[in-house]
Length: 116
Image 1: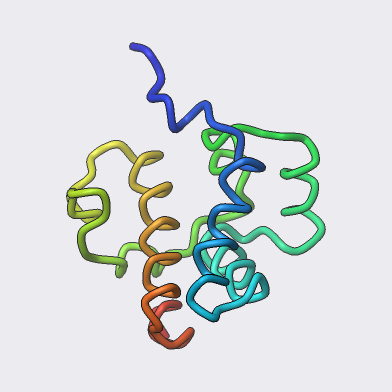
Image 2 (image 1 turned 30 degrees about the vertical axis):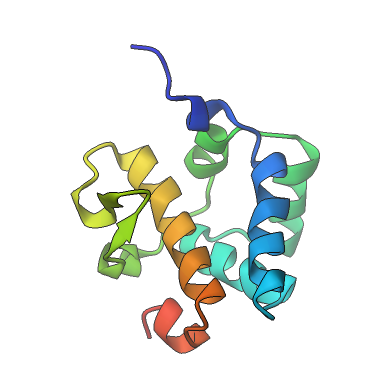
């Protein structure tokens, strides 16, 4: 089975787009990082290593220290699909991150975004 194109995309090329989307709406890179840290378990150093190493999205999520157990609380529609109904685990994790960044850009509080 051929890998989905998004799986092969370098995280380092998508990360600036997340920041740009957030900053357009008055949010910050720090908040984007906080979301990534919460979802994946990366910290500042390990996130930068993934960016420097230009890992693809599949590797980024496979090497994540831990996916937050509360990620399953992320619900809603992203790219026309309900995230909670996406069967492929990797695609669901990618869409979780997309959904969280969308919520940030839409002005939700960090407390709500991080499912606290």
